[in-house]
Every structure is written in C-alpha cells, then in structure tokens.
Amino acid sequence: MPAPNSHAPIYNPAHSLDRASFAHPHRASIHYGSSTYTVEESARITRQIAELLKNKGVVEGDRVMLIARNSPYHLLMYVACARLGAVFVPVSYRIPASQLVDLIGFTESKIVVSDPETAPILREALASSTRLSAAMQDSLTLYVIDDDPHCDGACDAYVCADESSLHTTVQHAPQQHPTSVPATLETTAEPTAGEPASRQLAAYQGVTRSTSFTSAAQLHHWKESYSQFPGTLMTWIATRVATTAAHDAFALNRQEYYEGLGVIMFTSGSTGGMKAVPLTHEQLWWGSRNFREGFEYSTWDVELVTVPLTHIGGFNGTTVDLFSHGGTVVVVREFDAGEVLSQIEQHHVAMMFGVPTVYAAMLAHPDFPRTDISSLTRPLIGGAVVPQALLHRMTRAGLAPLNVWGMTEISASGFYLSAENLGSHAGSIGRPFAHIEARIIDPETGEDSTSGELAVRGPSVMEGYWKSPEDTAKHFVGDWLLTGDLVTIDDAGYVWVTGRRHNLINTGGEKVSPEEVEATLNHYPGVSSVVVVGLADDLWGERIAAALLLEPGAQAPQLHELQDFAARSLPRFELPRELRIVQSFPVNPNGKIDRQAVVSFFDE
Image (cartoon, rainbow, N blue to C red; front, side, top):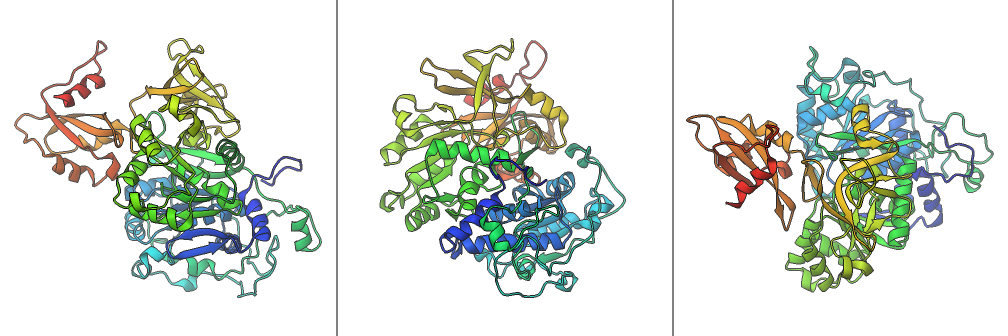
C-alpha cells in the first residue's frame, strides 16, 4: 500500500536509490566480476525490471522469485519489486529441485528468475511436477539470467523460448527523467488468483495432481527482456497525488512509494523445518538503522558480500542499505578465499560480513600474508558461534573483528560486540543494538533470569511466519520473539551463547535440522534407524555425524557411499561428515533417544 501521509521516514529502498542517483549518478554502485554499475545505471535497471514485471501482470503483493548464486540481481530485483509493491523472494540454488518447485507453489510466485546453471534443473523439475495448481501453471513465467560475466555464453544453451511471446507496446525511447507512469507502458489485466492463502508448505510435499507443468517450462532471456523497456517508471501507485512536472515532483519529495511487505526469506529457524520469514521495508530499514548506529559506517565505505544473498546476513547485513543509498557493493558470486582477498585489495573494501569459516579460510590462504587488506576496518563475523581462538587469530593478523549475532526473523540485527571490547569479552555476542530490546527467559518458569532462552522485540522483528500461525504461536510470547538460543549474562552485562534449546545443527552458518537428514538416511538400503547429531568443530562450529542401526545381515556402508546417496536430495552442507555403526541407541527415562549420549559414540 502507499506510504501513509505522515512525517515517518520513507522505508522503500527505491526512494533512497532514486535520490542517490540524482546526488551522485556516476559513483560505482556494484562491482561484479568484470562488470561495474554506476548508481544511475542501477536505478535505471531497477525501473526497467519493474516495467517488465508490470507488463507481465505483476501487481502489489505478487511474489517474484530469484534462484541464483550471488548476483547484482539480488539487489536490483528487490528494488524493482519495491517500485510495484511486489514481494521479492530470494531462494538458494543449493535447495534440491523438487523442493524449489514446492517453494514456488508455496509462495505462489508469478515470476521466477534463475542463473544459467540452475535453469535446466529447474525447468526439468517443473516440467515433470504434479504439485502446482492449474492456475499457477498458467501464470508462472520463467527467465534465465543471460548477462552474467562468470558464465558468458552459457545461457544460450538453456533458453528455448520464443521471445515473440513477450507482448509489449514499449518503444525504444531516449533516456529521460523518470516519471511515475510511463505513457507507453501497456497495462495488463489483474493476475489470475492462485491457491488459497491458507495452504501450507508441508501440503506441497504430499499433494499430487493429475496435471503436469508444461506451459511455463520455457525459459526467457532476462536482460534481453527487461532492456526493451525505457526505465522511466519510478513507482506505480494509482492513487498518487497529481503533480506538475515529474522532475519538480521528485525534487520536492512528492512521489509516493509502496510500504508494507518487501521480501520473503527462508530459514531453518530454531526448531528445524524450512520456514518463510516475511519482512517489511520498514523492518529491514530498522535492521539497517541498527547496523549504521552500531558499526558507524557510511556510503563512503565499500562493502563486499560473499556470503549468500539468499541469507539475511548477506542480504540485509548492511548490503541492501549501502546499495539503496548509493554506496558501493562488491558482489562475489561464490566464496573463494583468494578471490575475496584480491577483491578487498583491488576495491579498498572497508566492510564485509562472513561466517567463521570464511575468515578461517582467508587467514589460511597462501595469498593472505602478501595481500593489502588494511582498508578492511569493519570485518563483521557471525552466523555461528565464533571460536575465541579465531577472533584472536584475526586480531593478530591486524583485523579488528566485530562479533555479530542476528537471525532472519529480526532483519539480521540483534547483538554485537565491538572490537574495543574484544580483549576482555572475546566470544561474547555483546549487547543488543540500539533499537532491539532483549530479555532472558527461564524455560521452566517463564520468568526473567540471568540464564535461559534469549527473547527479543523491536521494530526490525517480523510479525509472524508466512502462512504458518502454528509456528508463529510457538515462537512468540506476546510481542517477544523466542530465539531458541540459550544464553547467560555476566556481571558486566555481556551476553554469551551457551547452546540451543532445540536440536538444530549450526554448521558453517547453515542451520540443519537433524530430523530432515535422518529422514533421508533412513531410506538407505539396510538401514533400520538413524540418529543425526552435531559434533563440535573448530572450523565449522559443528559438523554433522550419523549413527546407523542396521537391519540384520545388512552390509555397513562406507561414509562416501552414504554421502553419495544423501546428496541426491540434500544440499552438500547437510551431508554427514562422520559415521558410526551402532548396536542400539541409548534412551532417556521417558523412552526417547538420548541425543547427547549418541554424541559420545563419536569420542570412541
């Protein structure tokens, strides 16, 4: 919906990017491989994409999905969607194709864009799927990124669509100052409604339909499609205030921008199982406000993003804020320690968020001693419990790490420990950001305590999970979000994470449900029962281990055989790294398997 007529900030990122494109149009906005986008170019591309989406029938509230490795389009598409009031849905390419189809159906996405490597896998999964409604089959349109410098020419092998099917009356127009509504943009009818909003993600995993997906199994060129549009649409609000000249209207801040839901991100959360987290532009803005006040950065600081932009730490961990306000972001497609070091030196990167394994790999790389990283004044580290030894190694290497704790549900910003406090409190997550309230709740009594489960609230905290009132009820006490982290607070007021209230395994910043891994391994021939646990690991935080109980006479698998089997349906980070064959599983007094006792099997 349009922003209310008040003195509240305009939270929509399109507003800040449009203003930045006027203030410093030629400043570098995105460095990506051999490509560089200026702020003016980034703003124009977001308008062109918005015009394409509008032409394809996308309206306020519709979902637009991107399945790709890190790309400028994670930033460009988010702002483009914001111009229409549409909702951006970034999804990891590591998710198995069958689950990707489930997520498309669950979100009822109208447009799906993928990178060239993912496109053929996704197309095949969609073509053979019986899980999507007939309405979705008719409305879904697929695009493949066709201008990625990292896979030049690869797109052509995957695209078979007839681009003549793209109906538009837009003419190639000379660049001009953007207006609210381009006169030549063809208006389309309202989109076809999808399945009822009450449908749950779990339902997709068991539902079958008699129809198969064929109509949208063709892939359209992405840049070739949006570049046909002039890039004049700033925002599409039918009830906008009438103005005189568009230039004057913008200069006097009289344009209207949508507020409300901006992005849906998927997380394994605190208790396992993939959950969808809806975040508004306002919540993301407050998350960024926390970071700005805590880290004290500005748009003059160059940021590098190498963690996945499908994760909140990559997406809203200062990245969207800097991009939308005209700063410079270096996007690294996939993590490579040598490449990251090179990019830091080349672009004088000042700030970067990484999980502990990222920084450990950088410190261990042979190029580290001869790379000038003196510009990296804000090395943000988090996403998993950070070993004190790693923090000390970073300090000895000349870095001043800022330990950050956050989660998708709170727009990434929760707690942080400044570099100045590292000497006396290394390993602590510090204190809450300025606009986050926190309390520690005793799980047994529900009362405040010095040790227990961490709960938070504030303007950056989501209101609830997408289409899941049950999960929402489990994770909220009033307006307090239960994080699932067990913590203690010391006499100086610093908070320390001591564990998880639930069984979730945190490996390299990826949260893994042991029950999901067990469900896959239980299908291995000859396996009777499986218990998956997390083992402490200095590099990954935790590594996944599997204990198998075999059927009588079954041959014990080798670890690599089990990994190959599981890799058919699980991402690589969910594969077991250790294996034990057991004769029985220990149980607690309630007759349930004692997972902590299973961990001890791996000490033998």
